[in-house]
Image 1: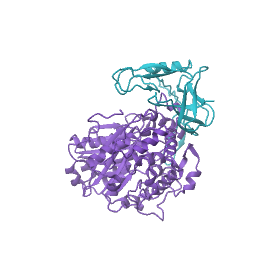
Image 2: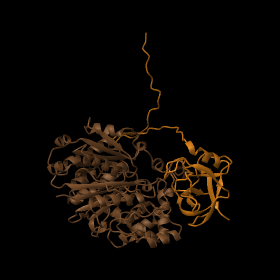
Image 3: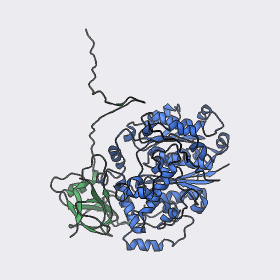
Image 4: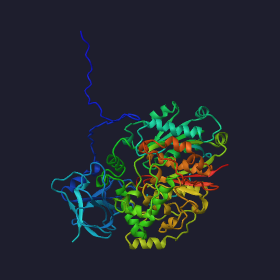
Length: 165
Length: 468
């Protein structure tokens, strides 16, 4: 009766260098999940062309402004927040920006492109980061939100900004 | 939190004094195929134990240890969960307790804070604070993506996958708000890379000109290539102890004060708030600045400043009795991952009032021979940013300055020769320059370092004070 021999079923690693010390390649492909949790509505609504923010509806909380990016819980009173639609057209002003020339691995936007931070006005507690679909930005420039309702990415890239005419 | 409660601004009060007596470094390289990570940690550990004029043997000092804190930025880079366990075993420290610390770029500072709290509380009489990073097992694009996962993965990471793209909007806003010339930022790059030229540990030193910096390729507008730090490999190791052991171990112990602060990871979520004032700042002094900010739709700290750095400095100055940092400190080591983060911090820690940050460079105060020189180590731009090690490296450089050992650790030809031909310098050795000069600050008594993470999400301010 012969014993079962355990076979090597991997792929031998490629050697990068033998000297002065040995280094080999270790290739791999990994799948991750991304959980949107209570912010799922935000991403689901983007695909419908709608922008939703949250606000704290706790009457005792001093922070009455809107959160965008939304938060499911208020950081001041720690109570759950409520959703509110930001009516279209969503218009903001560029607060600051950069031109992304050398993005990291896996970038999903054709580059270079302009990453912009958009000030949506005093009713918002925060400023909202996005990208400019076309055009050249400057601080104070008015921009309008657009939505990727056809072939959505199911990510934050489903909202973009264009110069306001 | 944008309004402080009654006790949020309480100054930390330790149960007993904490001291630092020794430090050890590896050289830092963009690629370091000669050594495994734990071997690099052992190199830093040996230098700490054997080259710092300690009055006991390595073996006897190991016999004093009660605790270790280990700093590592990202498991992604190490490709090894529980690296702490491997390093701890490799150094022969089992079964002493250890804790792994992760606070992004501030990991090194937080690691020292953790070890210091162990001493201050009485949990330990002698503790190790060690940090490392190995960023050369992935290519730069993958490394940039890994680092960018230290932005908000829901709303920011996909918008760049590159960390410079989260600092660049701050640079843009800072430039517009305070009318800053890009020449000032270039001067920071030139200065820090020049100081790295005198360090045997440095990975990207150079005698650059302002014109060269400004002619460099744009990485993320307006930041240019020489304004950004690089991927880095290496380790740093610091020995902390209580007062009794400090004087038994060393003739040159330094007293340590360290505190931290934080702020939202998403810069754009930083709501306007009142500026907490440092001891030398007067109520009302920022009224005009805030009016001007409001006129430009601005906010504090906004994209211009770091609340976490201001908060940490506030606490540490309170602990150490610092009344005016520019007058009281002999040198500083700041987190120049990008020229802009360095520049922004001058206001946060009170080297200049907010809005006047550039004057710290333009006045000459920031240079060797100036009132309070910064980053004589070469900083992150010139010497290293092996992230988990960075805040510890900065503290060690402060320690050696106060101990009057800059020359011992930077000028010794043996150290230069030992590391001349490793990493990316293999085959084109990095020799001690013929025009090497000492950057020892005469009679330094107090030194501060800022360990900073994720666009200002975590900051620690560490301060060493001469205690001999």
